[in-house]
Length: 158
Image (cartoon, rainbow, N blue to C red; front, side, top):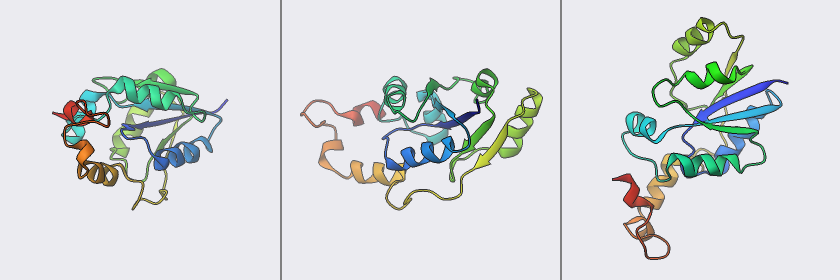
């Protein structure tokens, strides 16, 4: 069995994420998705996610294409690699990862893991999380009140 590992925040899950999972799974037959911790997103992107890590993990876990979904490590991005021992790590076309450091850490752990960066996204002008987020924030429903009039997701980002 060939295990493929992918990483991401997967906040506001969209068809671009599904295309990413499908493309990644072509490199093996078992797809493990590492969902970023809230604290990691805050540190790397300067903002909290709309959905918390448990909600995002639950959504990703519910997808048929995903064989296993786990939360990332709070301190060490590379820990899930050590635990899962994937045959392949697939990176998205725009994923910000220090490739030299990633490869060094893989070698350090004596893993025979190949790293592949995907080249072509699915309609990035339409299915890019930052574009979707910008659109949603411009809508009234994201201005503090949710769909049902109660405090919305935007209250979590503060």
